[in-house]
Length: 307
Image (cartoon, rainbow, N blue to C red; front, side):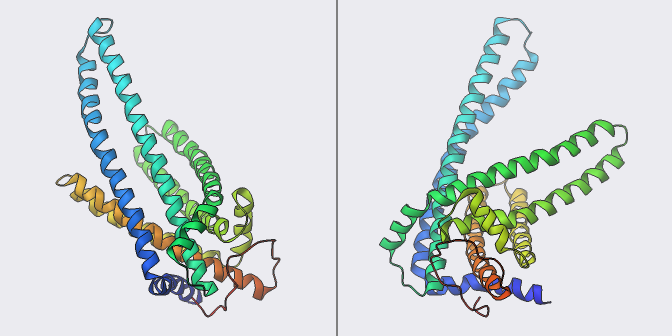
């Protein structure tokens, strides 16, 4: 019951931060969501013709006679389309990554001003973001590497099961379902430290593996709260994506844009909640008398009763 109470306090904390810093939060959210939406629209408009063209050429390749000039022309055209498609998607991923970094950094800095009692101006926020963003950038880069490594590690059991149980489809489906549950459970568990590491990179003068190590120290005894946060946000995002998938056939661009905006809002709210979580973990470490690593913090440790 205490764990659930702490979890609900973590959800209420961001609302208090927003109420006190409404203008800065509104500007940050508006800039982030507008840029993110424009990038999504440009990506969708640019990619769709290539997908249609690639699909048509692929079907034509199946009917073309191998070894003929027409066959090689289609093959070259398909390779060219794939190269352009990958280039557009890479550019979209890079732009989205940087938008995410700047937005998350700004949000965490706004949260730190709430706890330190400072009134932050827009100019001060921009200056702090420009001086700080490289630290969460490096940390998030390491997080992505760890996530890819984790997915690669769990991919092997899926592959082995698929190869060994092809003649037993029911057993294969049941085993893959169990593996998927285990994969998601451990991923959400590990991502508590990963997400908090990004927050640590903004609050403290550290980054990369050092920030992740500090985050691991902080979550001792409070990991369940972060785990519940991850479950909550992922369930909400999954629900909106599931609803959008049913509506996307009628209005794909509109529904896709709505999903992008909603996921962006949830991402910002999540990092506000993780900022609250950081201070709670920090306060818990002080009270329990645990080891405190070397740091430069943007705000004081607050009383545990403050969400």
